[in-house]
Amino acid sequence: MNAPIKKIVLPVAGLGTRFLPATKAIPKEMLPVVDKPLIQYAVEEALEAGIEDIILVTGRNKQVMEDHFDHAYELEKILQEKGKDEALEVARSMLLEEGRISYVRQMRPLGLGHAIWCARKLVGNNPFAVALPDDLIKGRPGALKQMVEAYNELGGNMVATMNVSREDTSKYGVITPGDHTKNRIVVGGLVEKPHPDDAPSTQAVVGRYILQPEVMDHLNKKAVGAGGEIQLTDAMAELIGQQPFHAIEFDGTRFDCGSKIGWLMANLSLATEDPTLASEVERLITFR
Ligand code: G1P
Image 1: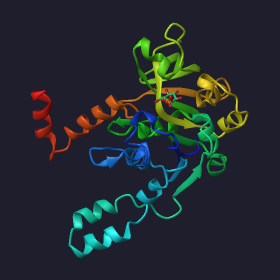
Image 2 (image 1 turned 90 degrees about the vertical axis):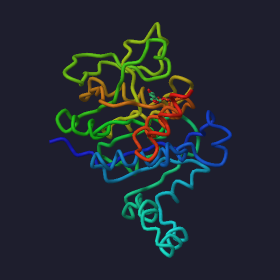
Image 3 (image 1 turned 135 degrees about the vertical axis):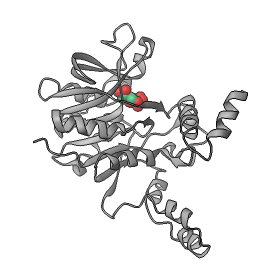
């Protein structure tokens, strides 16, 4: 039987320069989509997938995320006194049992692969998931649950992928696809941000992964790849041929909330699903 996925690493150390000045004093992962910060969507998706331990790889100026997952005593007391039970419930909704959420710092911005490597002691010798909170995925069930279900059958390593236009391959990790069964593709190769002329396919990796602990051995080499950074994609590529490796074409919509347009689209899309906002938002969109 495949060891169950009980841990997730959420890299949240990035500077968020594309959202300045909004991200000068708050982390980009705390930007709200409708009424919840991005990081909360990622944690909720992980919990839905049965994941128990949440590991945040943080950096300087990210402490507010620890507060987000903790009690806000003053706020809770005031809401209680005023009898605002609904608001109180929302304020308390993200409180995990102590010990289930851990924080480790990436002290230098050396790339996504380095960020994941920073969590190696907390991950230990267990398979684990990774989610990039910038990639907000709307799916029922969520993308991580879809992947965990596939993993329970297939084992090994997994990336979520979607088809992109060829000119966009240079923004993503891209797979060399092998056999395709339903939405599962055997991964024959992986390359980070290839030029459209060199891309092996248009199946692009979005920010959801299931990885075996051996990926840490490859990250340990600290090899520098695309963009002068230590790339997760390069370490994953080393596992191909050693362990099973599949891509899952997930069912859902992904919003790149690291970009302004992706974040705006996520807000509009989720707002149209909120019964308290839908009709106003639809009116706004059709007025142009
Ligand atoms: C990262 C990964 C890339 C992946 C992308 C998905 O890139 O390195 O392989 O396709 O996330 O969002 P980034 O967007 O951080 O440059």
